[in-house]
Length: 315
Ligand SMILES: C[S@@+](CC[C@H](N)C(=O)[O-])C[C@H]1O[C@@H](n2cnc3c(N)ncnc32)[C@H](O)[C@@H]1O
Image (cartoon, rainbow, N blue to C red; front, side, top):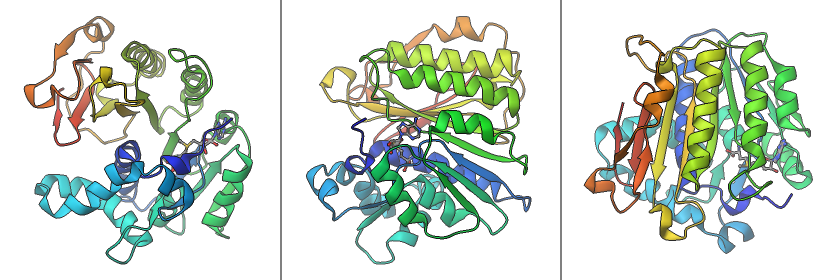
């Protein structure tokens, strides 16, 4: 396995993923009852933006650096949505300059209260060692160097009965159109939903091959809606596009699909026919035309779509 997140830390995909993550944790913190966080693919925890990997692959400059520089010019509602993520960045970077990027475990540890718990899995030797250093000694945190998919099922249901699972694999193994992490994620999700249907699950996946993304979304929805019995509005898909699909870029977009508890406040709808409606597609608005050609649409789910400069609900 060659994947090293240090080469990608703080890129636009991390910004979306960690914005969604911090909003979910902030929502969990609204109630005093403790929660548990399970990170199946934890990474190294913290990334040095002045280090060798960040200098050789400065993806973060087009991601978190842009957000850091442009924040004060953003509309108020955008600033409000980014506030928990920015607070996590400030904890790591008390000065004006960004020098360190917090990965998901450090972000969540910074937002957790004394009664909350974190379970972190990382398979790769070097990343697991770095993760241990990043997290230090903390009674709330348990780190395991093991397969996160396998560990997840063993961790559920958590004793706290509330919390969040982040499934954030590298999508490295397999062919270009059939990455094994899709199948592994679905298998783990199937078992997890059986054990803990009340949980919130945040799943990251790249947008490279639309067909693969649509199939994956459809499979996740089948599990959540038809097997676990969740109403469709409990699923949120947040897409961010930065380039056209045919631009030759290795990853023109990314997305997080999550099952938010209390995240959306829409009225219940029938799930009948969601699969049929999912097949429909739409042209993207002119503003986003440079960023993508056609995007999948599943009207019965809550779908947020944005380019690097715009974001809107397309429900
Ligand atoms: C995208 S990175 C994780 C980034 C991290 N979640 C964050 O947001 O900061 C994926 C990580 O998963 C690790 N990994 C790959 N396969 C794994 C598996 N089966 N179980 C646990 N970790 C795995 C890789 O070594 C890599 O560090």
